[in-house]
Image (cartoon, rainbow, N blue to C red; front, top):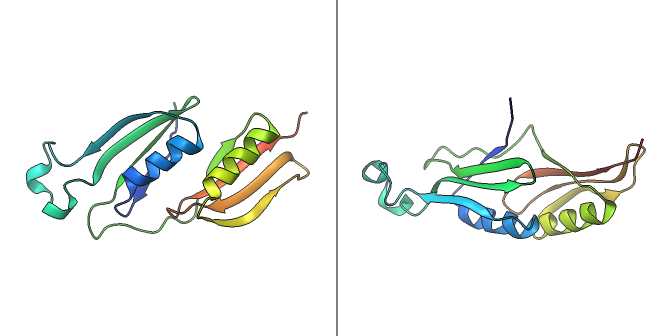
Length: 136
């Protein structure tokens, strides 16, 4: 079994995935708008270029997302996407990149469990925790 995050956006999925591709130095595998899909006829005209599915690989995880249907977007709450960075420098870089235009909840710092740990909400409203474990 594998669990992968699926993020919903209020019309900004394409912009968010371009941003995440830069933050994680990753390649977007799929970016499928409603236009040209079997759903095109049921999609409002102003929503045709919004994303019905996107995905990218970040390490061994597939990050997926889409734009919520019109009027159905709910602000993310009650979760964070957790990133495990292999080294403190990686944690610092990822945290700084994701934090661009966002809101830091807990600045990147050393903790009793981690060499680096920080929490933020990115400019698209997605909550993240970036962690670099302390060696055992």
